[in-house]
Length: 291
Ligand code: HPA
Image (tube, protein in one colour):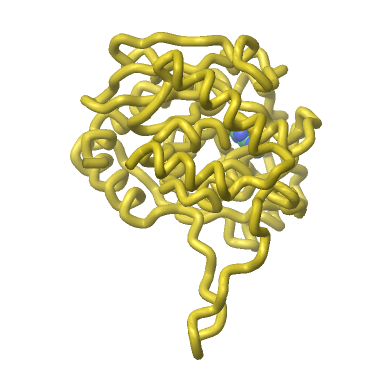
């Protein structure tokens, strides 16, 4: 069943990169990186791996075809083990679109993760809070996103790039990237652990500069509750490959139009350190809910 699942996902990749993805996935599977639930950990949030039992890890640099991140705080390791009673494969650190790689190289780790027989992927990030009710240290389940890279990251990467057929007489349906059942399970984990959770829309910008005041105003008027520089390309790919996805943003700072001191990457990493223990507690309660 899981082998079929992976074959189905690999079959949805275009010839441009299917071979490279399968080579890395085969190589990792032979080394025990397979099955369970996938997690991608964002800036300052990598310590979740401390909660992984029986962990074995491999540096990204050692994985065939896998580019390495240039962001110092992203450890760049793949970790496998058990957390919350489930098998997990964890990407500790990610590549960002602002690092300048072509989309196929940037998204290769995500495609490989999809081909490691995972049943779902949890994608986390550090984000600025746009919603006026959000405070640093809050967590937000991603209901949906606006991908403001304004490019299709999947262009040329899918075997069948045609839009899905419309239901007879009903026209096209909105495209759901984030799995509603998983989002509900995460909210239930929040209630069970006493970790308060917002649910909102994530705006994915290019970066690496933080947003201008005018951009913050635009994002807010466009309906974004949080803003960051990752996630949307990864989650769009996972959904296109038929992987169930849930997204979680850690709000590390307010993104304000007025009166905000200049933000540094270090500030974001330090704020991530404040919230990451709560995030780990939440995820440990969430994982067994995947059934
Ligand atoms: N903007 C973009 N990305 C971020 C922010 C922000 O304010 N905070 C953490 N990542």
